[in-house]
Length: 344
View 1 (cartoon, rainbow, N blue to C red):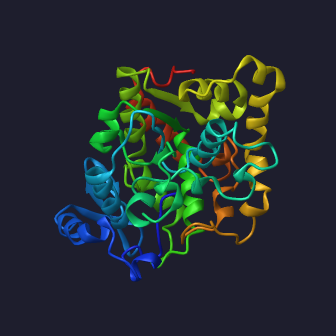
View 2 (view 1 turned 30 degrees about the vertical axis):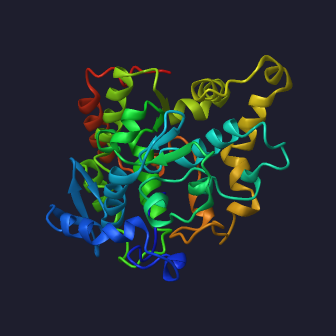
View 3 (view 1 turned 90 degrees about the vertical axis):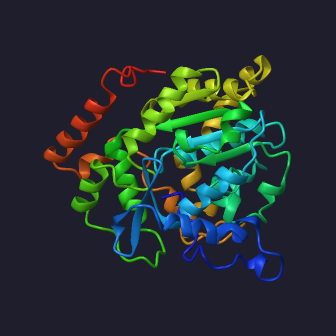
């Protein structure tokens, strides 16, 4: 998934072998000791257990990163957060927010998205912030774009208190599961092979997955949106994929970067849609083959983030019984919440 930080996240960052330990390193043993007291369960890999914290499941490194973000990350009122569960459209949404916020700085041929992966421009507060504090994007005070897979109820207090804007995207759980399961196979992980499709699916349905249960993750942000709709934009991947332009305009307006009348006439919004489309990004040299992100070590090559991006690919993997099971769980979980009727 987007969020596996390092093959060995306990090892020193390259810069830290020569300089003072980072704030994270100074506190890591404290996090490890605390995490050792939490419930551990078998995960999707034989050597990588899931750990329960705050009603959700984590792997060790990401939970350490979450605890560090909760303790040290300081959000500002003008920050904008891309929030999601892994494999629900995060990479696309990162590209869109970056392109919208920076469109006055670059023309169509000079946009950095043409040369580098979107994840380099919108850092994760539970991955980049603790593990890679030397990144330029984190040390650039003018950067206001951040991202997270942390469930809403476990976000750092500063994110909630600051009143900054959150954009949340969710996706049909069937496609989310398939995208996640296939994505994990592309990881250079030392923790052993991924479970079979059937076993992983059973665990996903029972809520046992990174940052899971998935449907609880969605519900947490949905309830927060209902309580504060001016500060949270709630998007569905399938609707955006079918007709991206109105949603990109809505996203820009929400971010405080609405398209002007002149830009509308020039087709600037359409240019953003085209630049950030799955097809455009997938076919860039930066996101092909074995190319890696330029700014730090990573478990995944850039091309891993661009598989199909299609709606309904689950039909090539799941049996009718699997479909009935997960649809039934979703219907029951979201019943009377208004979420399934939300068409914005």
